[in-house]
Length: 363
Image: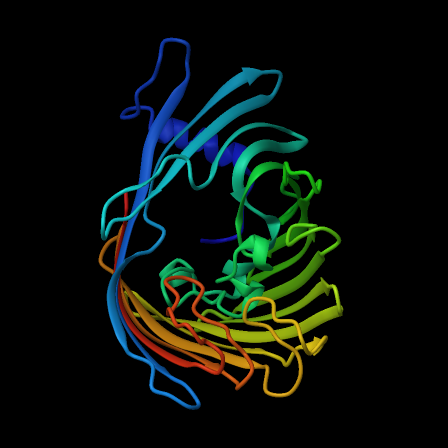
């Protein structure tokens, strides 16, 4: 996953490229099928300060999906497009229709407007520093600490796909693109999520900034804020990236805040790619009697996440990878993996280790 490009050119190019194989109706509407199969074998081990939690092994489906996508030129320089994307469990079967990026959109020279369910501008920052070679998913996901990625939106998470969303993406101004989004809670509390961000892709530089405001999502009068920024520079022999994040939660006993820093390096090696990452969630500051997700305040409430992986491309569509990841909670922290989290009744202070072997194929 890489930062977004201007959609019009991509959509028109896709329709031209698929014109010989995609079904085309007499009225000029084009549609095509796409998807991703992503499976991994995970080996998890955990340690706790005063006990020995069990290890576990499982076969996981990581963001496997099946979708339909289409676009139509409607005149006056406007392109109408749509997407219907469904997630499915490639390991156990089953899934949910339109549970992933699904929307209708209209785009022209002034940008693109869409409505439906999709990720927020906050998530556009993740691929800049995150583990793009393994598709920013599986237990290797670099959102375990960043954005509290394992936590539901109603419990304080920020890396989430949101329904009832309206979004505007600006045109591409020489690699600079901005976005704003609002997601309606549609409840009696008049809750909602506002997000805004910008990405820059210019030569070897990639950068991004995003802000997200959760208004009354965790409950009446409970507002949450998140700010993140990331930048990367591709030196050719290696790509180096860094990230910073600030989280602020309103509680009935005052504010709870946290800083996060991280860095990554991506190194091409033959037909494959080495990726390494380390990130530190600082100790929480604020009310000592409140926990939100894995975050608490006071001494020994920080955590580290680190990982290394190697991804080997068998073809442009198929890759294999193997990796190791660790998540070290201090005694009062309770973070877990963002994807396929380790289940434990008493997660505080856990030190998690994971080995993963995976494969993915695009179609």
